[in-house]
Length: 229
Length: 300
View (cartoon, rainbow over the protein chains, first blue to last red):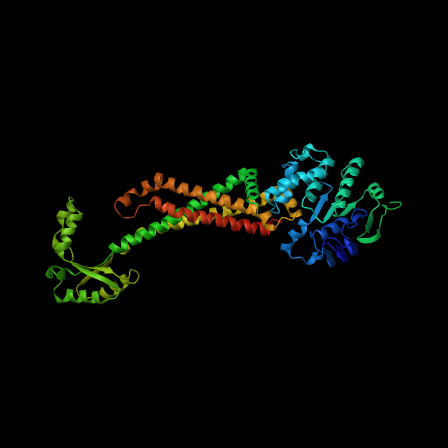
């Protein structure tokens, strides 16, 4: 479903490639951790999948689409099928929880009655039922990340990209978020999560792709974060 | 496309930048009011030209001996001139005004003034009054044909007198258009700047929109509509301003020459004719400026 074939990305301002001949294949429904130190290329990996950027060399295929060659006008359709969650939540502070989730549907032109129906459903799924009217600043970090996950998942993406989603959260809250991501994964959505969090990776025992200096140094099923790291 | 969503975004955007929005509307309004004034001047010039094309004649004044001796243009010299003129394809009609007729008209024109008593019929020339078929080329042709002919004293083109009036109206038009241009540049920069600020203040929203797969149109349309709304509101204010200006200043200013029939009055219908043009200019220019700004300066 996702396939990277010798993907290299060189940023103009840097001498060392951010990604260096990276090849990987991720099947539908997998749960994959993308680990590695800062600057190892995790975020670039995710950005290329979202077509925020194009690779310097190599091909990226997502759902049989050649992402790098995708014409500009088709990019929105790709992104509509991919959900995204970040360390800093990226909620709109002047919109309520419900409005934040609805926003993701409004801007892709979904009809109002569909939105009225699915927003409460997804809020219920992430454990925020009854909090639709609250504003983001009234919520805890964990709750805010749930809103972000609800927004990413509301359009039922086949792929959920999570860039250090627990980076700002305490260990207990992080565990709750991981349970939620697992739950989403069980619905058939592929989850690709970049993280630094040893304990999460170790406790989940999922596939791990490790990057270092832009290269894949390990790709292992049911793995741990790594000894001595 | 969800119109309620876009409308909501536009309204929010305008409200968030309210001081900037007002500045933009006012600058646009002043610029468009000047354009409107220029257009009204153009319209008045056209109307005045129409008004005069019926009235304005080329007068061929006859020499005094011909004037005195030939009371009905029956003698060879006058007949010859008349025939030459009538044969010209540029001439519509020629009418002979004898000394007596000129005198009668003169007395009527200066009735009650001492000047009327001084003049005797003999001191006024008989004239051939030429109505032109071709306003553009006719006058010069008649002048060329008549000047220096036996029996012709002088050729007077009434349009030389009217030209001064047109020069004045043309000057009004040019000055207003020049001012409008300067204002328009200011308005364009303000619109461009406002779009940029607006896009910057909403970068989080736009970032989220892009992330969830909103199309370029969806992310940019609110900014474009914002620009167009201010352009159109500016045009409406400009139109109202012209209407108010008409009643408060222009009517008064022109009252003298209008009542004399020198210049046709500016009607409410003229302002109503101008305002949709202003709306189109305002909206169109704002849209183009907004679009170019989004393309060149804003990464959405």
